[in-house]
Structure formats: C-alpha cells, structure tokens
Length: 238
Image 1: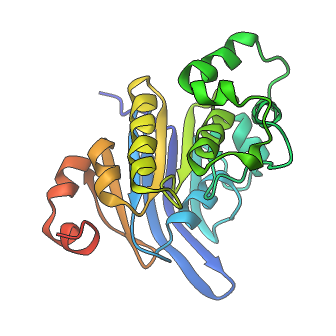
Image 2: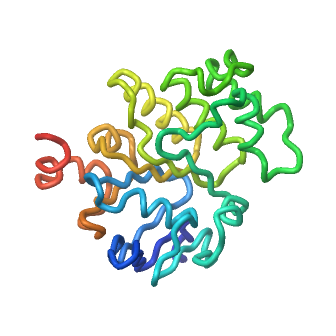
C-alpha cells in the first residue's frame, strides 16, 4: 500500500541561532485531518520548529516539505500560498485596525473572497461577528484569540500552525480555547499546535511529539503519551 504524503514534513532538520545548535535532527510529520501537538518546556525548540516550518528560520541542514514538495529555501509568503496558515504566539493582531480589517489581511493571498467565507468564520465565532467593527487592540485576550484563529482561516489553509494558543489566558479561557481547537479539528482542519499545557493538548490531539533541548525525545499517539510515566512526571505534573 502506498504511504500517504504528509501535509508537512521536517526531515532531519538542524537549525542554528549563530553558533547555538537549536534544533538537532528533528523529524516531524503532520498528515491531512490530523491534530498534532508539539510539546516541551521553555527554550526546548518548539517555537523554532514552527518558525522553521513556516520559513521564518532557514535550517542549516535537513529539509522542509509541504505536500511532498521541497520548500526549505522558500520564503514564508510562498509557503502561505501553498496552504500554510499561522496563529502566532500572543496573537499579533493589528491593534489599531478593526476586526474586519484584520480578517481581510488574513485573506491577502486570495484575489476574491466570497461573503460565504466571512460568514463561515462569523458562524464559528459569533463574538467576532459582534466585534467586527471594533478595534482589535481593544478586545479581551479570549476575543483576540478568536480573531487570530479566524484571520488564519481566511486564507483557506490546508494546515493551521498554532504557537502557544493558551499563553496569557485564564484557566477558563484556556479550556474554551481548546474546545474551539477541538471543534476545528472535528470539522477536518489539520493542525500542528505548539503548547506548554501538555495535559490540555494531549486531551484533544491525535498524535504528539515531545522536544527536549532541540531533540524529539518522545513521539506517538496522544493517548499513549498522556500515559507515559516520564512525560507525566516532567510535563503533566503527576
């Protein structure tokens, strides 16, 4: 049987910041329809992995592939046109612009955006619809998270990359944020989510990878990782 082509693949990726070896031989794959969690502590290389995937960081060696196509040297804009969308850490909305203007920026790679696409994100996020004419910078943290995800979805991505979606949110909003992520996953949105809250991420993910000092030290089905004794001790607080 022919093996499926991953939507995103990192092959033996080595990334440096100056002389510091950040990612050390990282291999990672995300297939269509999957929710993959990328876990680990502070400064372990999670965000660098995401930046390498989207083209903000170029690896010294190894390959990045989107839909089986080598994109290691491509710029972020080219990768976005191939169907990658990013919800960055801390949301990074354009605060002086309205919610609607932020959504329009999310669709900049498309020559025509039908009204139905705006209706889709407004149905997903009724609060975003209510706030469409409000300045993004005046929204609460939870509302900004909704707008950031809605903005990413406006590009009609094949794969959604999320960097620390729970960062800066209250426990209640963290739970709501992951309910939203789970809903998107159930609708068929493929996702790679970088997250420190391993417990929450593994409760809704299909598979997971655990990074430690730039190396993948564990990978497998999320349910198995959630039961791994070392992972529970290190990241799940049990």
